[in-house]
Image (cartoon, rainbow, N blue to C red):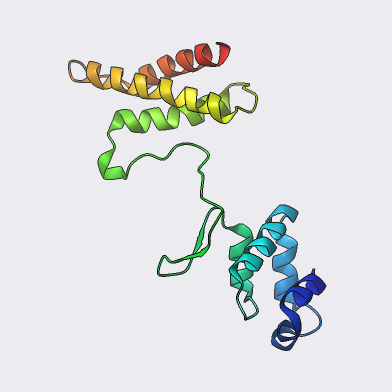
Length: 165
């Protein structure tokens, strides 16, 4: 690994850090998974910096999913757009209790059921079902008090039907 870093960043890397990895670098590299290290190398290569990465920069390049930005929010590495596992909700101030129940219901359903890994289309289908349920329960909630357990029970049934279809 150290040789790969020194080959990638040249003599300057060896001048900055030495010919053998310091213990702190060894510990950090050992904590990373192979795919994270590959991601870090790819990102650092795309970044095209003339200087050697610091340990925090290397770890950030390995661990960050999506676009890498500096402290000011400027994009450092483009081409790998962030994609959350589940669709994001608007900011907390804009969500109501039904949206919160809906978002957590998909996660709970996937954890509690024996559902295989879903494709993007199947997950999008669950989100469509969730959005319909949220609208229905919001409408019901204006007339009577709805409990989260009721929503979750209805959501699980609807998700099971959607996956079976």
